[in-house]
Length: 518
Figure (cartoon, rainbow, N blue to C red):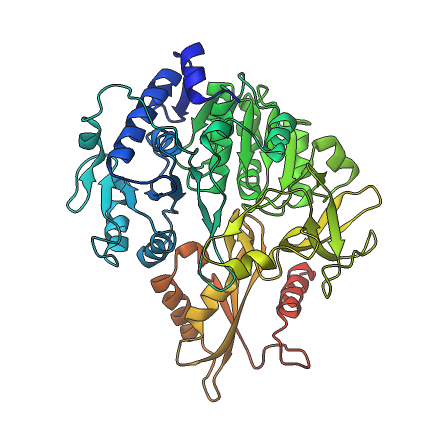
């Protein structure tokens, strides 16, 4: 695998990264030089191989030099969502034992909120990527001590350390071992096949529509490692995305279904006026895509629409192209590596026949562990070493996978994973609430939206004012994306004979309401 430095030598003046709005760009030579200086600076902080750096950044051009600088310095970097609350960020930083935090002017106040939970010894290095604010040292000033490329030690190759929401309400870290220096250019088989299937190469111009702190940021790394060009949107906007495709002659892109919905909602004359003929591969994933939405995109853009199903854990990945999907509408495809297995919900060792719904397991995935949680790591695998995301699905006779539920409780809204338990923990502490159940209900634009169904304590009247109070309570403790958009009251939540809450019954009841004729 060619490294960034190799591309900087062979195509130094080619643009590696454009900001889509024209606010800045980096050539391969510039990115290589900046990454070298960033690595020297990180090493000067005394960070040992395998140490962790937190990145609290919006879609910022300098993010790329930090990524590659951390990789060269043998460090983990943890991208932090700018939609989290300060206490949520503090939890992640403490859990991953971050030695340093980098923020930007745009995120400085959020960083200040997060670091209030730390003593100086816990998070010793706190820097601002641009500008100056009290409490955060200047990254740019620190770089001045390293004016020219320097020789770096032969450390293991650093990498991203991703966090996603946990079912208990606490984010979980997905951590993989660092590759030894002598194997730093090796690619796992799954990664090789992903790049081949989606045809990433030197001619790739990749439109990045999502936040760089999302796991999808990995597609930018793929692009640069293949010698292509990244085009980074500061924030997604349907019309701006179409303009960027035309302006930069984009060949590859990645979308969540909400984005497709918003582009399709543009007036027909606006959509048809934009030239998208350069597109070779338009990838979508992260959430279920309504059949009618995907069909409309194929009609508009042609057979370039491709889909995969997987997760940050990478225990398995499936893929389906447009022609396969038209023959198997609703499917998420067949596995890229290894085999998909549908097993009994009651016994993960027992496979069940095609056509029956069960838990989806994979063999042939990439090894990983949940940081500081060996129990959760073990739960992701069965006795045969097959891994699961916890989703339910079935196979057809041709081996194509169909998902019936993306994790039993998981809500996916606009491509963002939301776990109900965290929201329920907030609602259940209200003095009027006996118990709550948070579910995802259909939303035309976001795929799903968050709804809370609440059983009140005896004698407490259900009122619109109380519903509003509960939603406001969530807004004060959780990021907006996680907060319920509606609250319904019920006399009794559904349970089985053992007293277990039956969320599936709730989801089906609301789905039936949506489907009912007006």
